Length: 133
Image (cartoon, rainbow, N blue to C red; front, side):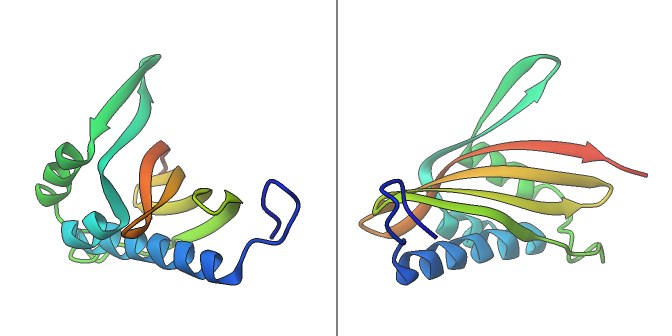
């Protein structure tokens, strides 16, 4: 996979980013805010649209929401999460589009990552949810 200069991205960077995304998927499915905290930078925010307005949720507020609901795993919900697109623009910036679900809600997430001293971290999540069935 090439970076913005057209050079192939280092295989190590791809594996590191994929590991962060897997931690995100596992944390989301298990309702585990420690795993989510390992994937998301402390200053990260989540953004979505509601009634034509942008909703901005800081990481800690989202964690409280996750703590307050049954996890998809505990509810026996089907798991289907996958990376749809991974784009590394340089040694410190990446974009990942993923699909995941908490039925009956199905999500498309746009995740922006920065490489920090602690490794790759999700710094921003913009998502869309669709309710089916």
